[in-house]
Image (cartoon, rainbow, N blue to C red):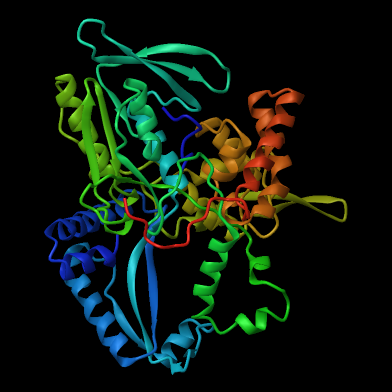
Length: 488
């Protein structure tokens, strides 16, 4: 059950560095575990996850030796879990691969770069894929529903259910369960306080650099955006060229957003940076298992630990052990990187008119690749809607998202609002706020046809969509911290 829709709300070398220099075995275990889970995420959802090269420019030979040795240690630790070997590129090779890379860093000349590979994923699509995979396995998925209060057994005080409100219809109902799992991320303390209003907080919310208040839609501050731009421009050679066309580089930012990361409180941690990114599972109220902390890379093992705790709490008798380690996510079955070619060869995206004659318009490569990566083996279902229902047009100029995707998501992926689509089914809101705004009226129109919305609902959806997109733009009034590590 998700309060604002599936995907709403908000691995690396760094852990290895801490493990080595701080002699922290816990951090080293976290590295091993994250590497194993990262490999499985990519294998279980190959259409949504892939290896991403990360390049670090070096302006001294010491930096090259330092980073190269560190990354080779990373390769060694990763072993069979490694995506690709890290390597060194000379300055000339680096500039051929990355032409806009700065040749100078202050008064130093670029000596070369070191590259290692991490994993990248489409988080919203993966989250939706998990919900759909669970539904296929028999789970009841409830979208836009909120827990108002818990139901307790009068004799034992054990939580045995919850009063729930459907936020779309406003209807309230009771649901009963042997165990309730609280996986509300940064909002998990709010859920715990439904069980006991005096429950102590266990979440320290924020980024690696700063703590923050917990709100549903945090907005980025102009100073935060400028900080990132300044950091990027230190390594790019195009800053002076771009400044010929714009007064401020922030004018070139298509979209900006920020999120809240829940870190489980550790009383020994000096600041947010030193808090472990591992997850915590506890049952501080009978019948309510809470899981928090962790990160996307280890979502599967987090879920396994939470279910194991629920089994223990409810004295349940499962018929088998956990099967999710190598369970493919919806869309991953039979997917191949070249599967987009089937779409270009066998499907028509839209009909075009030439001299009064209507002829088929081909499924272009960009749209086909987009569908193949977003929907995996189910991309042909979207292509069929585009071809047969005259929904093959692009939603926004310059982006491959098709009108057919809106209809498909409404029918198959619990897409109940315009915001659901622009932020939680596609990535349009995160890529280009203005493009998402231009596509919004058409998205509302298609969803209205799918869900039989009346005029007032269409108007409301348009308004909510515009308000949501405003949170992706910088705000001078948004909460901002100076970037210093604030102690817990």
